[in-house]
Image (tube, rainbow, N blue to C red; front, side):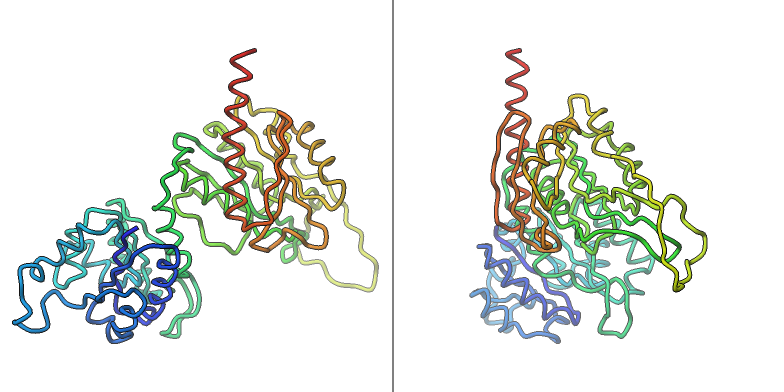
Length: 406
């Protein structure tokens, strides 16, 4: 991809250098455009060294002698020669200019002339982010079809804590990488995915959960959306940024997840149950915190709803994919679960000694009801997600062929 990177004037401007490295590492060419304010935080020479290209810092040439027709319409040429405009950090001032259509420097003028995809990473003080004027400007930019990578939350340079931090440059680069993908083989599919753990309360301050990070389910949601699907992600409590172009439904307990899945089941064509749902919950949850004593404590537990089995009974002609995380007899248990839950595919992974949890890596065995067994990994969970989606499409074609010959 031919990328224009607009760098706004904020303390996070130095992180734009990391974004340049992430983009060029993926093979994208990068033309950097800096505002005057951005140059107060980082020098153009830094970006010139990283990109090997001249950094554009002004709408006008440095000296009248350098004026030429090409320099006079340089913003038009840059707009026509590039595929994506990324602005990071996109300050409150820049977002306001873009929304209002102001053009008083090279970057804002380029924005008006640009007809490709626009990706904005808003970055500012928390109060500025929350201000109705800023939120109104962002709503306008979203309505124009621009991609907004929402800021991270955390400690800011101004001393406050909250939303406003520049997202991880790797995350922004991933958005550009997604745009460069041409495979849209999930267009028209409505994919319902569950991810993460559930939390079953023991009292108002304690709960029972598991070690699932949600990374596998989020990777599947990212990959399916990138390949053209409309994705609904029902997520338990995780510490992950929301996937781009995905409808996220946040839940806590197994009952919450059960209800959310059934609410969205009607419109789904593919269901992928990657969540690690708790199998048991407390029979009675006390209204007050339990006090510690010297006496031994026993808890009475009831089974939680079996979401996968219920979806299996209701799925009709939808394609259902389950996950089996086992510490022993992996393939036998995965096959048993696939049959008993009426799944079309089961993704089995070994979780003994903590394997598969929290890591960005995974290794799985994919089983289908047509008898296929496919090994995937060890690899990044993003790559595993692509392999799973490939197998889903392959299975769907096989099932259709079987149905046509029956």
